[in-house]
Image 1 (cartoon, rainbow, N blue to C red):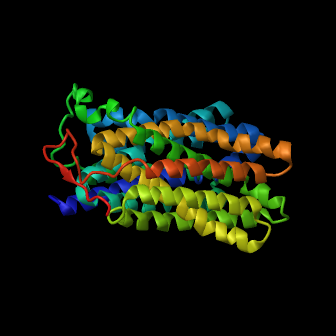
Image 2: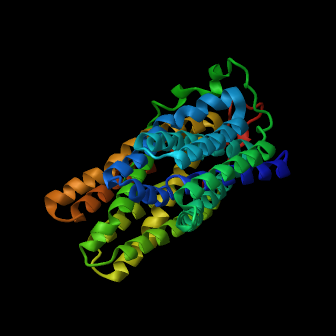
Length: 410
């Protein structure tokens, strides 16, 4: 590694941006939003559109980092996301009408697309080269802790005398500080060129390298399918458990536990991708997701629900990490990151999962059929992953003067 200290500073900065971005948007937005809905007498459906606005804009804007990075670099792309977060939070702090909050929520989605996975993966992969797998694992693992850290902060600030306005204002200030940290410590990877106006023509961002590749289609199915079932679990575990006579608090506890397991498993799987063939990890993780969904569907005893926690938690987290690493290995640092952005854009279709599951539950009287079917759909994807072909020993990025060595599996 050419600049180890600088590489670690870059990793720390982009991880902070991911932790803050994910923790303050999707993980915590519902807490101040609930207080706003009570104060302004918004219905739950009206308030829920805020989440929809954030998710849809985030999906549509997932390709934005790939348009900005060749022009302004990874550092200023992440900084721009932090400043957009600050602007969205300030607008939310002033919101007293639904359209104003919807606009703020849309800004959250655009900002998250800039600060989150695509930009960070690009920077980490190019800075750490042969060790990109384990470092992406650390990046995603620590970043996922924002989902555990920020909700209690949101609850405490919203319950204080300043209420939801204080929470949004404080988060706006923190977003600016995170942006300053990123501006100070993120640097472009050594050897990466093409920040001129004609940079988008750089073959390192050639979308034709992956959009027709069979491996890309399998990875799309794996990641979009994983987001689909994960959203279904998050949205429907409480009513599913209610049908078993279990409390909402119990469902929230199970969700928190499987998220914590997923964060730890992400870090470990990053290390494993350097020793085992990632496609084997991907196939095994998809099978675990299927088993987890079946356990959840037929859980009528406490031990089955607790067994769901590690099985599904490991499954979805390893799938996301292994698929990300495979994109980098198959298509290179730059095109692989562009492929990741496109997949996150396609993952917007996964937001239909809870609605489909709810419709099936209305028709059948329970969530058993939906949870079982959605889990079983992942099995053919697991089989397809086994036939993707081995990853090469080296990945070359045309935007870099030298090849980046990547170890293959056994």
